[in-house]
Image 1 (cartoon, rainbow, N blue to C red):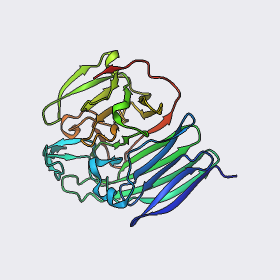
Image 2: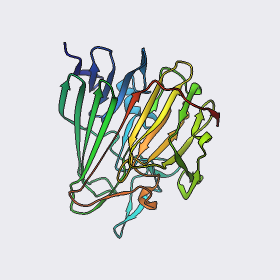
Image 3: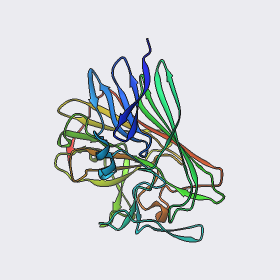
Length: 328
């Protein structure tokens, strides 16, 4: 009997691709035609099947795309101040899509059409490979590239996304990448506890742009009891060159997952934590660079023609308790 499948279903005017474990009902569902957005994820937390992400129930909700839920963030995550930057001796102006803060926000891949180029079903996994070729025609970003995403649902490892970005132009290009998952975990964020990895907090100004100062995060400050807190802050991971884990727990239901990310040179060395105004979920975002990286160079990756960036992140369950909690 097959353990995994790749299925296609209608989702309004879109086609939804579902990677499914046929034995335990774990699944990942995404929309290739809308930024490869992951609209649903269910993983087992012990003996419970947990709806991990705050996704989209209808195509109309997806089109509204509130708070960039579960979006792929490229060719930059987070903010570029006033949409302006200077690179390789030239000045560029990106479109502004953040009216309150007057910034360019989260790149422009989040709603573009990806091509589903391959699927692979084995005894221990289901994998889908998606591709997009950017032509360099967005104002302020004349750097063509190819992006490939490999989404995998694994028997013992949960969800994994491997991202590859290749400079297909003739000039070197600046690049940043990230993902904007919103976690709900069958509950409300007032019951959520986050255990951050060893990291430093980026000091931000009133427009949420880094000042250049890093604030030391003490051991006891790594445990965030969300409660009624409003959070929009960025962390730089202290130890890189290995897998970094951020632990998230729903203290009421016991659902507990890890968001992991590869760190090191040209990997995901930053984490953004954000509570949206709706307070229905919380975003924990793996990122390759800091906010405003095109200007401050914090984590900025520069690719030569033909050069590629490749890194991975994912989500899995582990039966391990939160060690300590403080209010924030």
